[in-house]
Amino acid sequence: MQCTLCSSISQPFCADKKRQYFRCTECDLIFADPDTLLSQTEEKLIYDYHENGPNDIGYCEFLNHLTTPLLDKLSPGMKGLDFGSGPGPTLNLMLEEQGMKMSVYDIYYAPDTGQLSRQYDFVTCTEVAEHFREPDKSWAQLIGLVKPGGWLGVMTCMFTKETADDFNLWSYKGDPTHISFYTPKTIQWIARHFRLELEIVNDRVILFRKNKVAL
Image (cartoon, rainbow, N blue to C red; front, side):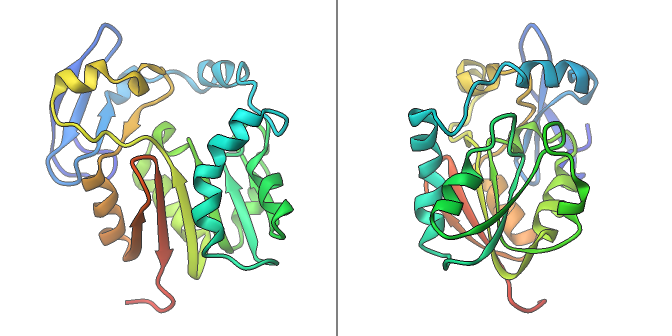
């Protein structure tokens, strides 16, 4: 199986009752068999049940795991994009309260592709990367949205163990819309491949910085 991120050879890793998973021998991405993915209609029906929003204190506290380290890198007045804002955009409002100028984009709920035709001082992508059907294209798109010298803040739960048994017991893989899973090695591969500075804040929060000049 060809890796959906780096196109290298991937080996069967494990399987459950619903689908098989592969693990890349080069970038370490773990991904679901592309032939077993939900349709976009089925996927959106699941997202429609999400009730997260700006009035949910717990959700805001969760998002603060990204906003707190990211804001240390930013200055008021900077322009940002929340990529994959979901049915209840929240992160953009939290950052606007801190003086940022925010735009939002979501393939289902805010599908204004005009927001993807410019670059931003920073881009946020919270609990989205694990949904990427074509991570090679999606990561390139994300990074292309960031100005030279700008920041990309990502939240996704990394797989930090090793065995197939560990993966099968991992609750994060239980969501049928989660199809691309990253390890620290995968994140490091992304940083090298796209020539980004990397700061792994914890096993769920990653900050990338785009170089100011092309290397």
